[in-house]
Amino acid sequence: MWSGPWESARRAKLSCVPGPLTPDVKKLGWVSFWADVSSESVYPLIPVFLSRTLGAPAMAIGGIEGVANLTVALLRLVAGRASDRAPQRKPIVFAGYLASGLAKPALALAFSPFAVMAIRVLDRFGKGIRSPARDAMLADFATPETRGAVFGFHRAMDSAGAFAGSLLALALVSVGHFDPRTVFLFAGIPGALAALWVLSVREKRREIVVEPPSARAFLPTEARPLVAPLICFGIANSTDMLLLLQGTRLGLNAAEVISAYILYNAVYAGLSYPLGRLSDRVGRRKLILSGWILYAVVYAAVGMASVIGFWILMAFYGLYMALTDGASKALIADYAPAESRGAAMGTLAALGGLGSLVGGIAAGLLIDRVNPAAGFGFGAVFAIIAAALLPRGRRRSNDSPLPTA
Image (tube, rainbow, N blue to C red; front, side, top):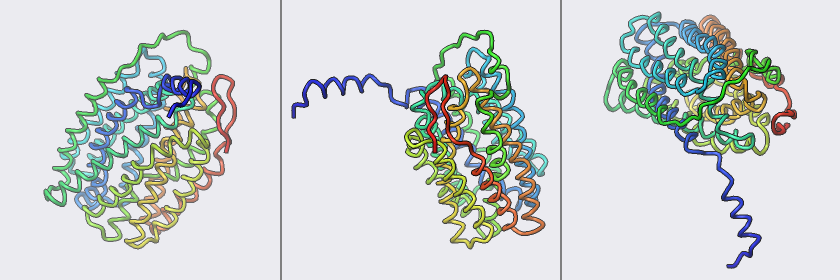
């Protein structure tokens, strides 16, 4: 049917508008996909490996992940600013993925909890230096109107890799009957692919000029309202390993723990992109608030859950991640000026990581000394506090309006 010249003109105009998923956004998505195939084929086995093979208590597991998160936090403080001052962010991203890729097979050589901690520090070293630079690259590739979609797509690819990695671990453990050490060795292959894939990303060299005062600060003034809620939620979000450890306490074997983790990642992967796009339309705050409240409900319930309840809660945990992960990164990009976006990404992630260190040790101690309900209830309380402190949207003069709740 003839649509008339006005419709033809409208379609021509729309065809000139670039979509949110540019080739380089997609390439960074594949980088995260392969990195998470590597990471998540290992991650659900670490608490099983630590508790059953090396005899580590819950507090030690929480402490190991807390030290690993502290490593990420401290490195992000400097890595974000370094990426703002570098002509290109890509070399920093490549070095980070390479370090993490080498750490996975190194776990096969660990024979004490201390050795696991040292290797986890190497792994988190890689994450700490790459994440602010990569997130700033994604923000550079996006517009204010497409940031939610870009970060949502990236988190979808990340969690799709986690889903595939968990399936790989399940196949190796239940079908191949491999022990965790062998799985750790296999994880080195996709880790190497992730590092190599970074080299295919095309990034324009940026002209580095004299820094304005906002770029010299670790945290630009515009982003400071996010400090308190992100620290509080960092304390709440101690470590997913304690959640998986709860599965083992309920009687799940290694294959069943991995299967529960697969369910979580399937929900996370399937909903991240559509919910990221939704945040572009309805506002980041609404999704983040919903996700943090859902997190509090999951944590309040998991310490008292049955085996069936644990499986249901893992699915809702995936929904919480899809609601918040991409939207949180897009929210930071909304608040931070372009010239100090890496610093804002790094510093706020660092502060959340410091909170996670405190939360991991405290929750693990409560699980060991009191009961699981107390440990997970601690996280639920801080999630509610974080939700109460989350600022409302506002307008910035050098960017588009931020949507309000």
